[in-house]
Image (cartoon, rainbow, N blue to C red; front, top):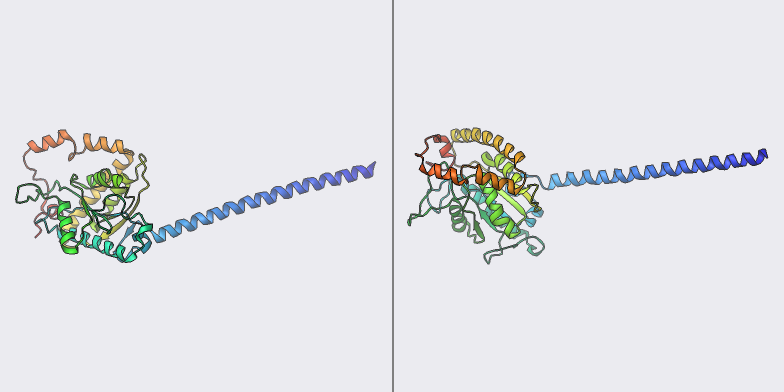
Length: 312
């Protein structure tokens, strides 16, 4: 009887030991699996941060894989032009960089596998370049011989056409500030054309606020469109040191406002309501008041210079 109990106890002990061993092995297997996933995730994040930094400092820094994926290049307007062929010098720098990207895209080849030529392409096989901005609130509009406005984006497109021989060009002709640049380029062009992988180009003095605004407008919670944004910094060519310092102060102040807007307006409907009910450059009531008011003398000379005023 005792022998049977001893055998039974031994079997029970072995069953418990086996169960504990099984659970221990299962636990270790789960830990190992999770560890592998964590390692893969960390590696992926490291690779993505290495391969695709958010801001590139020159065209040569952009990997061929990123150039290959691009659907369009976006060039921000920089202020009043002295003629239709001559945007401000610092805007010409942006255009020159855009042309370099288009040339590099040609060299990458193998176009069919990318998002290349999505939407309208003006009959060209080149990477589309979208030039932004109607004008600025800081400097009077350049007028053509027929008395109609010459949009900033028109001047940039003219420069790209004449100086670099590009033809796959598009213009956004509604915006009068950087928020408008982002909003109208998305609603008028990129959403419609299916351009999702974008390279946004502006000068160093303008980049921090530009990135904050485009990240806000293009990565809204609703609607999501799967945008992938990269940025290219152009040199601060053509501005005096004093003008750059004055503009940098203004940019930092404006960036604080952008950060508040981005946290408050999280959907496209929210942004639209803000644009049409609160923004001084797109709200009917405020535009009417502005049109009736005496010309403003608030803009300082150095700030005006940084928007193309007085530059020859």
